[in-house]
Amino acid sequence: MTKRSDRQSPRRPGGLRIRLAVLIGAALIVAVGLATLVQAASARREVLDQKRNDAARLATLVARTSTVSQRAPDILDKAIGDQMVATARVAAQLVAVGKAAGLSDAQLTEVFSRVAATSVVKEFWITDPTGRATIHNVPVPFAFSPDPKVQPQAYVFYPLLSEPPDGPPVTQKARVREIDDQIWKYVGVPGVDKSRIVNVSVPADVIAQLRRELDVQRFADTLTGAADDVRFVEVYDAENRRVARSSADGVAPPSRATARQLANSARQSGRVRTETVGESLFAAAPVTVDGKDLGVVLVSVSLVEANAAARGIVSRGLLVGLLALVIGIALSYFGARRIVRPVELLTTAATDLAADEFDPAALDPVCDRTDELGELARTFRKMGSEIIERERRLREQVATLTVEIDRSRVERDVSEIVDSDFFRDLQTRAAEMRRKDRDRGPDK
Image: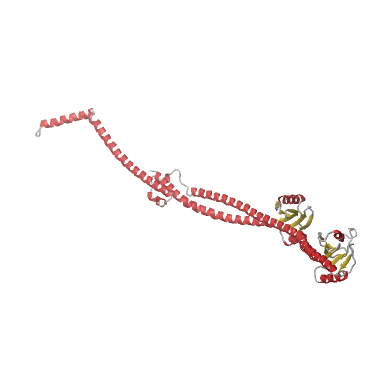
C-alpha cells in the first residue's frame, strides 16, 4: 500500500486558483482598458459634437443677424416710403381740389404748414410745370433741376413733370441731405391737376439709428468680447467683401485658404460647414434670403475648454475603471477560490483513491451542489466506492486462491512422497514388521 507521504507528485494547493484569478484579472484589465478607451473616444466625440453644434448655431445666429441688419432698415425704409407715397398722393389730390376751389399757393402753403406741424411729414415741395416750388412750408426758394451735377439728390424727381397723374412714384432711400448732415427721406409723385412735382420728406433718424443698433460689426464685437470661447467673427457680403471682423485679444485670424474653403463650401451647399484646426473649431454659415446669396459668416470657437472637459471625463473614467479593476480582481480571486475549491476536493479524492485512502464522505460538500461539479462529484464518489468494493472482493479472492494453491501444493508433495520407491520400501518394511509381531504372538 502506498502511503500519502510516499507520493511522487505532491499537490500544490492554490495553483489552479491563482491561475484562474490571474486569467479573470487579465480579462478584467482588457475589458476595463477597452471600456476606458471607448469612453474616452465617446466623451471627446460628444464634447466636439456639442461644440460643433454650438459653433453652427452661433454662425447661424450671426448670419441671421447679418440678414436682419441688412433687411430690417430697408424694410422700415420701404414701409415709411409706402406711407409717404400715400401722403404725397393725398397732397396731390388736395392741391388739385384746392386749385379747383380757387385757393392760392399761399393759402395751400398755410394748409400744408399746419399738416407738417402735426404729422411726421415735415416738408412739402409742390412745383409748377417748370419745376419751381410754389407751394412749400419751408421758406426757402427751390427749383428742381434735371442735372445730377447741379442737384445730385433732387434731380431724380424732375422726370415726374412729364408723368401722368397715376404715374409711378419716385422713392429715395433715407440718406444724408445735400444741404446739411441730417438724414432725410424724400418721395415724389406726379401732379393731378397739371404737370407738377409733389414732393414730401420726413426725417429718417430712426432708420439710421436702427442701422446702428443692428450693425453686424457691433454684434460681432459683442460676441468676441462677452463669450470666452468665441475667438473671432468675420462677415462677408455677396461680392466676398469683408463687411465686419472682430477677434478676441491675441487671437490670430484663420488662414485665407481655410476661410475661403469653408465660405465656398457653405455657399455652395447652403448649409453650415465646420472644420477643426488645432485648438479651434471653424464654422461658416451662408447668409441668404429667399434663395438669394447675401454673403457668408465665419465664426471660430475655442476648443481649449472642450478638450479640458474631455480630458476630465477621461480621467474620471480612468479612476472609476481602476477602482472597478481592483474590486474586480479581489472578487475574481475569491470567486476563483469558490470555483476551484470543489475541484481541489475532487483532486484530493482522486489522489486518495490512488493511494487506497479514499473516503466517500469527503466529497459530501461537493455532492450537495446542483451544478455540473456536483454531478461530477456524485459520479466520482459512486465510482470510487465501486472501485474500493471491487478491490476488497479482489483481495478476498486472492486470499482464497492463495489458500487453495497452498493445499494443492501439499497434496502434490504428499503424493510425490507416497509414490516414491523409498516410501514404498518403507511401507513394505513396516508391513513385515507388523506381520512378525503378529506371528510371535502376545506371549513370546
